[in-house]
Length: 92
Image (cartoon, rainbow, N blue to C red; front, side, top):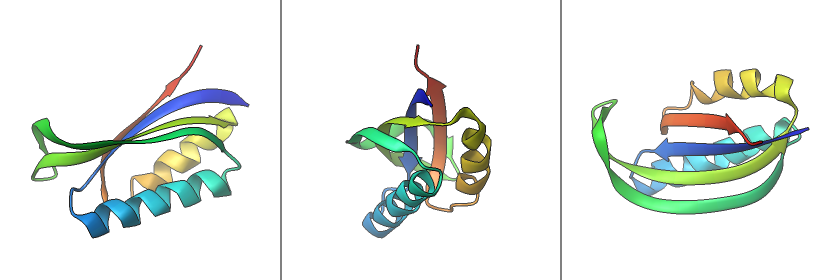
């Protein structure tokens, strides 16, 4: 198991944010991840438009999971319409 930090940018509508957040948490649960930190970073202006959106709702996760599951999680999350952008970073 390795430690990762993940940041997600969701659409700003309440339904899209809550629905997308639940889908992401489900993906982590299916992959056997341990979520150490789960922070709502709020609604912010984007530096550039992403999928025709100029604002996004940011959410931060500090998670522990197996390295080989990251690729599958990323593939699945790319299909979620509620997620504008995301990034996983391995912690030292």
